[in-house]
Image (cartoon, rainbow, N blue to C red; front, side, top):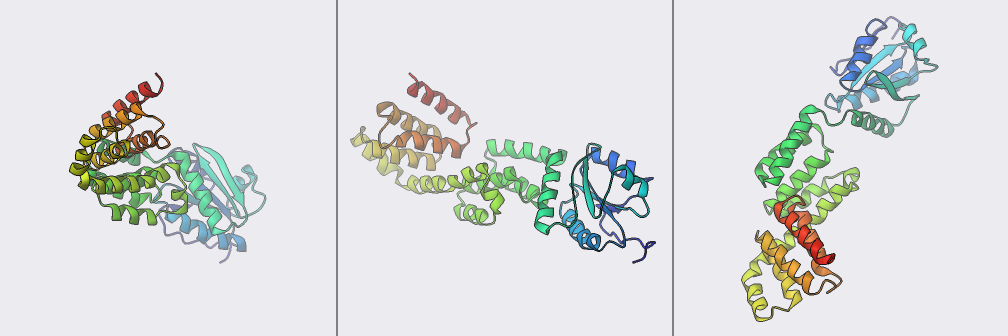
Length: 301
């Protein structure tokens, strides 16, 4: 490749810019989304190594950021203004300003981390934000089929989206598809698994499955409690069965009664179970709000 030869850039998210187009293609464009600027030259071997890695990484971002390439041999004014001392140099621009960058080659893993960090500057985007709003509304109404459809759509463009993954997981639990929920967690990256919201959601699988299985013993447990109303273990078991059968308010009331009778029984087992159920059902549900108020009044009398 000689000095007059242009790089072939097939991806629509990757383009070459010049001194004349830099203001429009970088400064102005970065007010909409982050822009990576790769300063390179045809004679630069490290540039030729870094270029394809950058282009490949950017092509996987589904248009969340753009990559522009500046040949410093042909655009020395821009290189001078930005004080480019060596190449390859990569700058990230957002809101019209350089916000981060690096010089030289980096391992592909570090480049991916750098790009992830830059993407987060602009948030999820207006379209994704609208979908997330609808998703949360569908979760609150327990419209699980709708939740699956919306979550799956979001994950096609953002596989690591926490809210969409939680939505998908909750929908499987709501539909009692526990095997699907467990399979989903196996596909989570280490980054997702270490996210607190994801961790809390994964813990709900065992609670939901246990309560669903217990629901088959509902009549038997009710009979046992009628015979011995002070048996706190049966009380706990029946609350689990009620929760699994969808009788949420009744489950909460039973646990609140147990807490009122003996809040410290079995290392506060009733209180812990109530909080688990509230987390599973959703802390913003009317039943959960009512239960939290009653719990506070019992504990802080």
